[in-house]
Image (cartoon, rainbow, N blue to C red; front, side):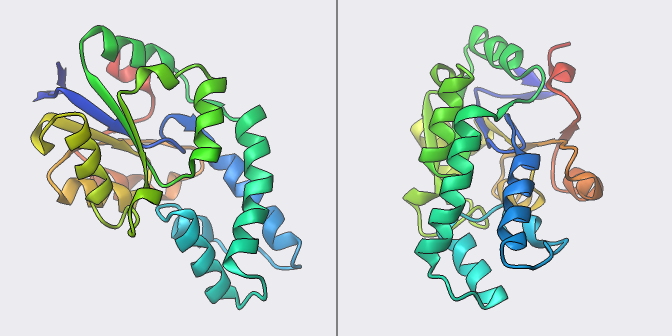
Length: 218
């Protein structure tokens, strides 16, 4: 199957902001976290932690804002807020189900590479009834790094039984797109309404930019 003129056998998807319509939810979690401490949410904060796993994000937050809480306490606070949202409120981006069905009908292997925690994403995958589409699901908890390293993409491609050249990576975050693109993956940047300032950077670090999955169903 081809995406534009690129022949592919597999796709590795990010979840938040790529398949899940969850970026506004995370923005609310961040706002509530800072409001509780009588602080304003910095404009660059969400983008600064988006490509990090929970542990690295907690460490970054604690150090940057000199918080008294331990990293474990910060993570628990995020967990309590996010698990409820993922289990009950987070939906999918438009045409996601249609596109996943189309890919499976065409024999494309599907993987997930996420910086998120399984206690967040698994309830959401199941609630939205798309967990069965994926041949392999991977998160950064399996690695020491984050999406600043291509390790998660390389590992997921290997689990799918495919080479880098046979896989496309779909992401919504500039840093993650750059990482995958620099590693040799065909990269598709997915637009998100919370990241309009990043559109040009996304285009620069990807092979294709889409506003909606319906563009790929034509």
